Image (tube, rainbow, N blue to C red; front, side):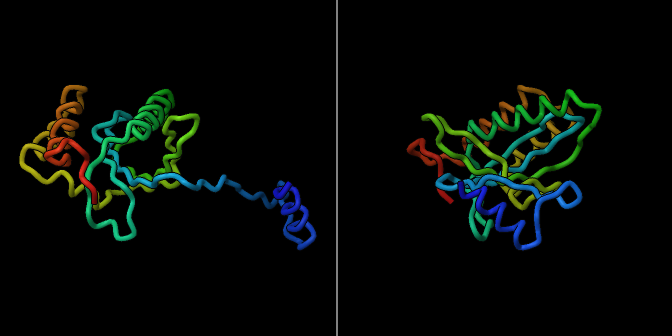
Length: 164
């Protein structure tokens, strides 16, 4: 296989993978759609999630609800809640969404512990008030209200998601 040939080559070149000098490998994900996402978390609970298509400039944000990304984030949060660690803050993710077996599957390809300029999508008074309420007390009802508001703000009159 190509992998075996490559491993032989690096060993011959004097840079083998060993216990003292391990390498990390990851699959190259191609032919998918790349997205950026930002989550706000308080005490291991998801406060809010925003997601948008990735772009080179990352200056124009259009919120999209991507079910495969929300499912991955929900699984991540459930796993986090089963640990002894407590997370409060903001995380930014890049995802590659691929079609596998006819369904979308989200793969995280990067994570950064910071606020993302994507937070500018929280730009109307009612959205900011809802975000404030979520920061004070995250409830499923308030998160659903945020989804409805973002869908309102980022859906064209014809019912289709806006493009950035």
